[in-house]
Image (cartoon, rainbow, N blue to C red):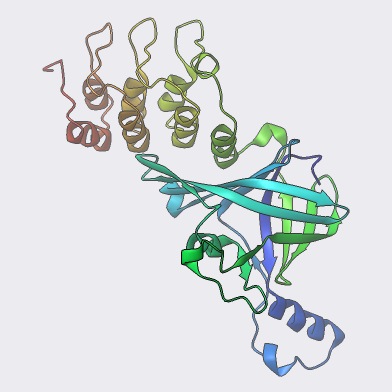
Length: 294
């Protein structure tokens, strides 16, 4: 499976759906418990699981068209056809990266129960005051039913079956780019490398309105205030492309909403020049000023 480092979940079927499908395929009546069970479903949300050679796994996905981005980070272990996954932290980005925080899920059964299953130790009656853990963690375990370089079918501890498709290395999605940047620290020298015009990766991403790449670069340590040789900043680029999400993310990372290019134009001037009213309103709300009167 790990011949490809990133995988996208594409189909899921719960145990009841599997039992119903098995009865249907044999031409017999469904058991009463699953008589009205629906079929499995194809998954349409933007998600990816990325595995590294050092035993780390990142499960990242976006909700509400990217307004909410979640990235679960942890460790995995392969033993034959069985994989055990233990998530350790959760990174959350809200409002296109305007709000970011990380939750440590190694402690606190309320949060951990949200993504991992627990069992109460047999006969255990423990006291929180004594510092004992009232619950014992049971990690997520998957048994591979089939796997090759492009497709993987596995059954989880609950009995549900899921199908993953490999993501080609040259077709990495914004989600996997974001999760990779979050899980692998990059030096500021690397992320802030300039091209022949002095533009950084962050400036080019903002010009392309690629909000996910903007957030990934900022998470990796990119400097939101750097300018090209003509004093053009990522904020100018976001204003030009009309990307409100990029403007918000850059401002949260310290980008100057009123930076002046050598032409004298500020991001607000650029937004008005290229008729980007939403971007202009976002900049004004952030305190931006225009330098040109016409």
